[in-house]
Each structure stands twice: as C-alpha cells, then as structure tokens.
Image (cartoon, rainbow, N blue to C red):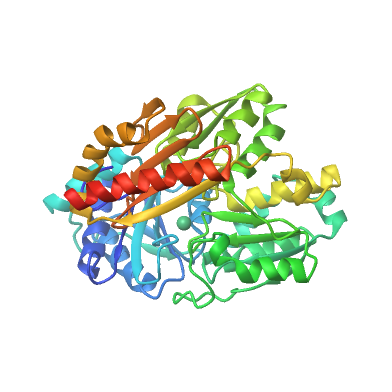
Length: 458
Ligand code: MG
C-alpha cells in the first residue's frame, strides 16, 4: 500500500469528505505531469458524482498539455481494453467500484491494459502532494475528443475469443443483473450477440443503486437467484458498480464463489497451455490449489487486488489469474479483469460439454468459508495488526505456518485464517476456511474474540 491517497486499487473515498473536486483537479494535473505527453482515455461508472469528477480530472489533465479522449459510461475492463487497443498512453476510470453510492474514486490503467502498479501510484501521489505540476500555456493545452462506441468495440473483440457458433446453437436463457452499474451498457448486448434469450434486472444506469447493494454476493443477489429459478434460466450473471467483478449463478440458483470458477477455468486451460501457473490472492480457497495441482499446475498467491494478480501474471507468464470475489484475468486477451470473457467461457464450456453450469461446477468441491468484519478506525489499523501478529497465532494454537504476504494469514492443522485491514473502509476483515462447518465456526469465533480484544486494548 502506498500513502494516504491510494488504497488497494486506486483512490476510493467518501465524496465531500475524503474526496473533493479540488482533489480531482489536482489528481488530473498530477497524472498529466507524470505522463508529460500522449492521450489518456477517460471514462466513468454511473455514480451521481461521476461526470463532475471526470470533468475536473479532464480539466487538470489538459492543463498539463496531455490529451483526453472521453468514453462516457463504460465498464472498467472496457476502458482498460480500449486504452490498449487504441494505443493510448493510459486509461483513467472514475469509479468507487463496489462501494456504496456516496463513495467516489479513480483507477489508473497503463496503455498495456494493466493497472498502475503501487510504485506508479506512489509517484503520482508524490507529484500530487508536491503540487509541482507541469503547466501548458494557452496554445499548447491538451485536446479533448470523444469515443462513443467503446462497448461495441469491446463486444466485437470478445466475440473473436470464443466459439460463437457453438454457443449460439444452444440458445441459452440468461438473466443479467448489472446492479444499475456500468455493465448495463455491455453484458446484455454481449449475451444477445451470443444468441441468448436475455432478461435484465437492475438494468438502467443509476448511481443511487436502487436495486441492490453494488457488491455482488449471495446476500445481495436474492432477486437474481429467484428469477433464474422461476424462469428456468441456464445462467445468472451479476456485476459490481464498475463491472470489473462478475458472479455467476447456476441454473439451480447457487451463487458460485469466484475461486471455484477459477478452478473450473484452470482445469480447462491447463491441459492445453504451455504455462502451468495460476495466480490468485491470499483469500482464495485451498480447493483451487488442490484442483490446479491435480491437473499438473501450480498456484501462486499475491496480496488482495486485481493489479497485484496482474503484476504476478506478467512476472510468471501465468495462464490465468483471479480473485475469489469475482475477478478473472485472461492474459492472452489482456491484463485487466475480464468478467465478460469469463461469461463467454462459461457458456462455451456448457455448449462444448452439453452440460449445465451447475453440473460442471459440482465437480469443484466446496470447503466451508466464513467471514466477518470488525470496525476499526483507519489510524488504528497498523497498531492492531502489529499486536495480532504476536497474539493471534498463540490464541489459535495448532499453527502450521504464518504468512504475511498481505495481512496476517495463519495456516492451521485444519483450515486457515486470514486477518486483513480493508484498503478502502475502516474495518478489519477476518476470513476462515476449514473442512467442516463446525471447525470453521470455531476458528472464526476464536479469531474474532482475539481481534476484538486487541481492538479494545488499542
Ligand atoms: Mg469493481
């Protein structure tokens, strides 16, 4: 993690408190100063603050002499893909991802479709803090242009990545829930191109997120689950606000965790791939490692965040990467999350095997996983985590290994615990996994008690 401005992925703050328009203007100047020249693709999700924040960023960027191409409301992966496809210097997305509607933020992407690394973010933050911005004079300001068919270009390229004819022949019935987010402009149309009968819920762009919370998980997807079952659909697809995440629902209404879906993709990909490496984050299930090793591959873990995964994919020449929360990266296409290609690949697997998604995923085992979060002020997180590194392994006992790649990971004789401070919210998250529900509940209870006691003492 870098300084005060950037969190796990880019900048994400409460509008009006942590993030103001002045900040957006200076951030635009900072990134323009950092790049010095070229063109930045600028887009946003559907948040009420989005256009205003994008306007301020745009003004800041062109004041440094760097050009801006504005893409309006498109998904984050579309922005990253287009920046690469169009050969631009960088992409900037105005979004607070899956956070509640009152949040806003900015994500940065390089011209090679990979997110800015922590080092690049640190350099932008340094320029931002120093206020030593490049100032272009009146005759050398950056140009502002527009691109209005970003989603169409992305769809066209996605269709080249899968067996469209095969998928079309099946005439699948798909329910899409973009959660009023940026995927409204892409997923339903992509599914239509694949010959699916599509029903969309929460399908209008709306920054108030009236339909459901933006984070796609079992608790927020009740309407989607019900509709999939009621209409006997083949697949449910749900996204977060900026649509870099996707969660799939089986024909039986089961919400499938991302790490299991990665395992399914891995099993398919590893057979035909030169690389045998799969990248995932510290919070993924051990099931993924087991499935990957069964088919002759190996997994490597990174800190949480899709950029960390992408960096490691590039470094190790991995075939695939992703996160349990619903991030899938297919490096042969590009290095940003690809929720849309993930959807295409699931339909392709279904079509090729002539089996349902529920049937395919049932071959990937489930280990019970429990999560909780505890409120901790941001300025106390470091003290609490330091104290826990000492105390939590002792409190839990039976420790096999302690990992500090990201947060505090404790591998036990049966199961594991991960305690990590959120990069975006004032909370510490605890995740546990174990072979049975009884064991996982016991581990979570004991871990929670210890974390609560340390928070109380700090
Ligand atoms: Mg997101």
